[in-house]
Image (tube, rainbow, N blue to C red; front, side, top):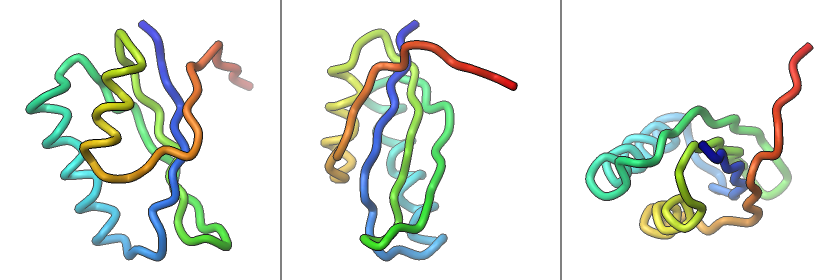
Length: 87
């Protein structure tokens, strides 16, 4: 199944706020996009605030983009994963 890598800036948020964003994301996914699987997210601090790098599995890109729009966090970059490398 295709996998998608997303980058978005979430701003200057606390861990509790990140947890609330993640919970809301899961609620939206479960209610309207059950075909999507959220694999994981890496969060880093940047000069612009916190950035989230999320990995999803989905049969189509549009579902992932629509889910992101409903969450209210704009996508800065969106890629389909070509392959994975491991050490």
